Length: 113
Image (cartoon, helix red, strand yellow):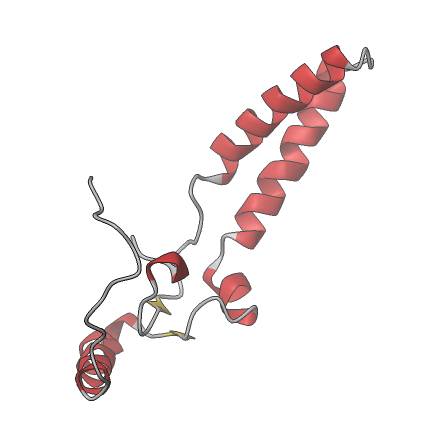
């Protein structure tokens, strides 16, 4: 689990990888619950048909936007690599990273997991 927030030197993906915090099914359920609460507060009629339609749309959106090709098209990563080429790409990346100066002071605190 690494992303641009951790300031990596390189970020590669395999073609079958996903870039999301949760899957489409889970996200659609959470967002539907939020939408239902908002509708109830605003006193808007929200029935099960609207709920199912909203859930379907959100699931499709998450499935599409979490795909490796979607993220790579927006330059969120450096490349999509063939899993067979992982060792070669990793070796070249480590070689390139070792040729760059290493920053002594970090810009973030201690990560506790």
